[in-house]
Each structure stands twice: as structure tokens, then as C-alpha cells.
Image 1 (tube, rainbow, N blue to C red):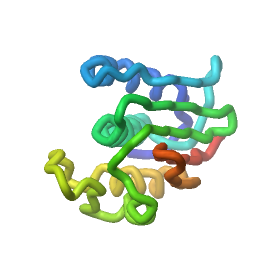
Image 2: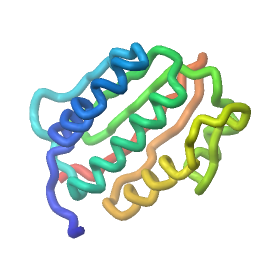
Image 3: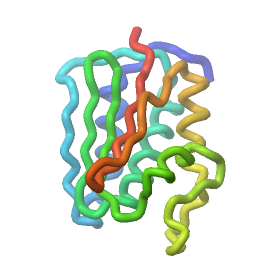
Amino acid sequence: TPLGNVDVVSVLTDCLLGFHSLFEKKGINPQVDLPDHAVMIVSNTQALERIFQNLFQNALRYAIDTIGLSLSAEGIFTITNNTEVLTVDDTTHLFERFYTADRSRSTGGSGLGLYIVKRLLEKTHGTIGATKLENGFFCLEIVFRVV
């Protein structure tokens, strides 16, 4: 699918609505901080939807009870969640194919979700800005190419 200008706020909002019942089922009310205007990036809607879906699934799988989402006008998307599963060492491997952080439980994850995110970002000129684990919170930052 060719790249074009996409409003990341609109796609992100639609994906959030699509995950509403899953967040509710886990008892999580995501803290969301989005601009009140369009943020146009270079991407395509299908790739962007898949990126957000995979990130939300991952956060839901590992979050204890808190998920935060933010997007800046400069195209920096941040997703955070509290976790008891990840280690600092895990954060260096999360984007490798078939890597799963929680080896003690069978959570049903294939280890492909974040690998797919990385590959789709490469194809749409986005980058993984940072990953870190601090005080029990995992934080992932993605930088989209703003138009």
C-alpha cells in the first residue's frame, strides 16, 4: 500500500474505540493525552492501525492496571504501562522476532507483535525513539514523520 498523509490522531482515536471493551474487561481506563487537532504523518492507514493494535495488545497483555497513551503535535507517540513481568534486559530484545518477555506463563503471545511494529515503522519512515523500564513502568516511544 502506498504511503500518503494520514491523520494519526484520527487513526489512534478509532483504534482506541475499537479496544474499549478489552480495556474495560481488564479494568483499565487508559490515560489518554492527544492533541485536539490533526497531526499529519507519512504512513498509510492500514499500517498505522496495525501498529496501534499490536501496541495496545501488548500493553493489555503485560499491564497490571495502568496504561497511558500520549501523542505530541511533533508526532511523538508514547505508550506506558505498569508491569511486573518485564526486566531491563527484556527491553533490549522486545523488537526481535518471536521474543516474549513472559516465559513463565503461556500468555498466548507469538512474540511477533512488536517485531511487526518495528517492520511497519521502517516501511513508513517512523522510528522507535526509546524503550525504558523505570519504577515498574515500561515506556515505549515512537517517532512518526510529520508532514
